[in-house]
Length: 333
Image (cartoon, rainbow, N blue to C red; front, side, top):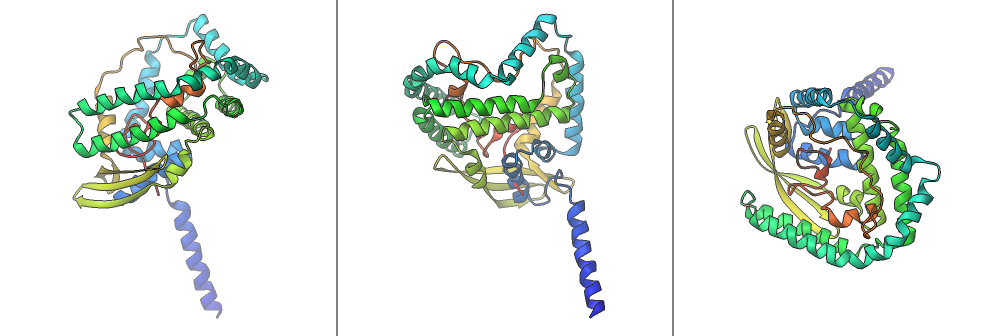
């Protein structure tokens, strides 16, 4: 009996050791699992993991080097740029930020609500034209892009952007997100490492997803619905069928995957990163601006209305939440 207990203990210890040594930042050895893991990373707001499993380790290292090279080419910020950055950050992080932002937004809420159907219709029309005229997309890709566009446009036309209580909830999330970034100066922002920048981006996207949820666009639900099934595999290439529910619309697409050193990656992500890395590093053409949250405009548009004009988590036509990276699709482990 003692011998059996010892063997059982040894077995449990080995299992625990195996679990502890599993590297979540390594892409999976199965194409369907690798595709699914991308969505799981976004769902968990783990952009560190996402950035590692989206591309191979050597491409990640090249991206890191590229980031450093581009940072080195940026001119030192002027005193005015530094002040503008700090002022904009302070607007969203001050003790009374929520009240001041709502007071500024509140007079425009009725205008936002009134213009929604027209703005959503214009956006849908222009995007539909772009999809139809895109000669690089196949028939299946165009259908999926159109399905995504129709779902988002329908939501954008009817989402309660004029609701004052929801505006307060959204502003609270924006302020909390801005504070969580813990950035007060442009100098501090420029000193961030590549990994730190990725982490800050994850916080920003997480905040945006919470704001979308306030207005009925539940990206958690969408990402939880992702399924990935291997359709075919031939050597170092595979196709995974990814399905998910976007605002009650069932979206399905075939996602090409490529195997490198025994692990699977999004082919689209790999190709996009390689194309980007092939371009020479250039100094930025315009001064760096402050973080991405803008104040409400006087013409009736606002930060709260932005989601109505942008194709949220499925900009890539291959999987949900592709906004996460310049590289491509999504899905999890």
